[in-house]
Image 1 (cartoon, helix red, strand yellow):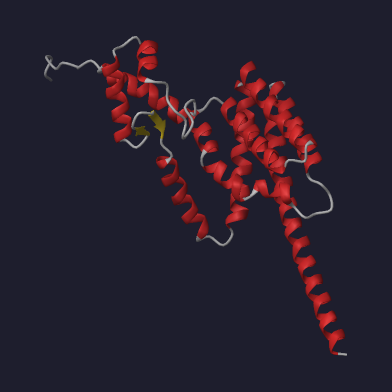
Image 2 (cartoon, one colour; image 1 turned 180 degrees about the vertical axis):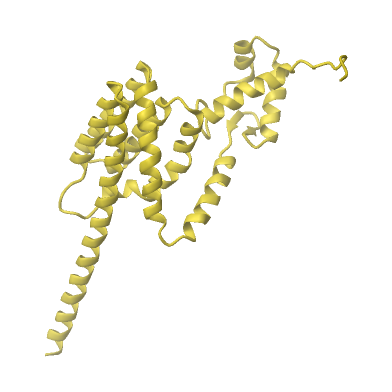
Length: 260
């Protein structure tokens, strides 16, 4: 063995790159958000602007950032879009994709809720409660678009409270896509019974379990919530099918009556 091998110290730009990359992956710098200017980052890290600029250029080369002339650097959506495109292709070719989606989400969100109950800090609780109250307010205002956004943000805040970069990224990308394809539709169901009061109650139960550091109860609440959503959507589809069938019969009766 050669005892004279030298280990080169990591360049400043590479250290800065690692920090910025972690912030992007963790969601601290969300997709399409603008990064602080070079000057601010240089001051924060206590380095020269050329070192920061070199790190930013490397992140652009990796497609993690977009450089906009005269407007700074933005977190690129391309890695997330490529990731989601592969999943969309997979689901599009699978006949039972929705059942598999709910099965996947039920287990993942149950696990995230349990970890959130174990690891949450006060800042996490405030964020979860904020979106819980936003959902309830949107319901009182009868604003379905805000309900859907607050519902997703509530679950994203729980993922962040698990304090695991992979869960945060998974929730912000794949689970977000699956949410748009499935769970958000419950806000627009044609059923007679309004699902939102039940959703509010379930959200409250989940929040209290996380607040009280009860991982088993939190997991059970999250899984029960997803089961309710899946069952509600299935019932709604049956309701819509029966309504369409009834409308068809009525139209046929009218056509026969007109012939007489």
